[in-house]
Image (cartoon, protein in one colour):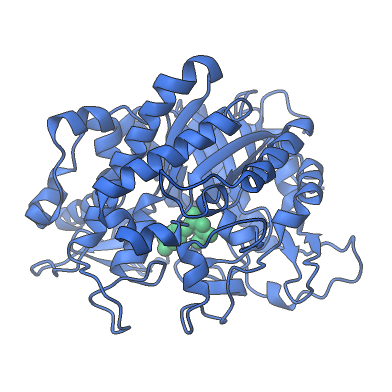
Length: 491
Ligand code: PNW
């Protein structure tokens, strides 16, 4: 049995939704089954030397085949909601507005949604979690060409609303547009692997492309939201939003105004880049325009009006916090962080948090509470926490003793306990928070890290072709903790 802090009992409203989040390319497998077309992540995984352990997205956790047992397991974990993404190239294999719909793709998602609802689990559905159809990348460079891309995305979104919107009431257009564009077009470590400053023979121009792609993401999100609100929402009565990623940036020296300003600027480059156009001004933050000038695209007045207010809530993904220091030099042409220096310790030598099994990710709940308030103060929009979680060292060595064996994961329990306590306290103070999704349901294919990063509440034996699953202790911790935190709960 777990022990809980009585001061946060019932801190979350009775209609609070919680569960786990996943993404199609990371869990489905069945990369070429039943008519699915290729995505840029299939290509990435099949290109030598891109993925840390040489793995690819062919099979991953095989949730395409195992979805029924997965839903049954979620029910045992006590979730009320499940966030997953649709694979565009499973639904429209060639991606484009005049390309045929793959009925077997629709059928799969339709069955998954029915299974969830039959088990009392609310589906939260993401249209785009980074897996651009390869055909669109080949035809016109994907999101680099907004004129060609937007009609294709509009049509894809419309097919999803039409065919699944009778049962799906919570839509998310994009997952983390910022991570997609920075990892794919700046660092070049994610598909489509374009970068002009890393010596990996990638093509691209990292001084402009990340901002062009972000602009396309914002506009195509806004058009899809308009389509939903005008053509579907009146009958289907759902909600549409976007999910943004952002860590907390704390001044390295809190008594130095330059560091305080640098931390705020880092926060704007990371979050306000998307959130100011969407929720505040219809335009990019002044700090970005000042540094980037004409390398940052411009919205027409009409586009500003379209983007502002397009997302009906704030989808929030966040994992960790950093210390940030003023940088006393001209910004680099390939800088995307607001000309700051990032570090793991502050001026006093205080560490940002305990290490996980993932280099960038440490347990830093102290920053999470600040981030929740920063978002709430600046945007005054209800927050759906759509991802948060951690890896833990040592999980590769687990040798299950039988099908009911449970992996002990105290590091993850401490992570969830401390972050959720911040959620509860912020909620008690009036920050409106509507959901929490742990990342992630099962161990999965962690993009360029392959199978080396295990974020799951469920351990998967990737060496076994059947991909058997085993619970981690944290799955039961979360179930019991939400029974404590949610008003009227059982603990
Ligand atoms: C998110 N960072 O990505 C994604 O939405 C998931 O698909 C992914 O598996 C998960 O977080 C864990 O990585 C991120 O460097 C990738 O700060 C990198 C960062 C943040 C989020």
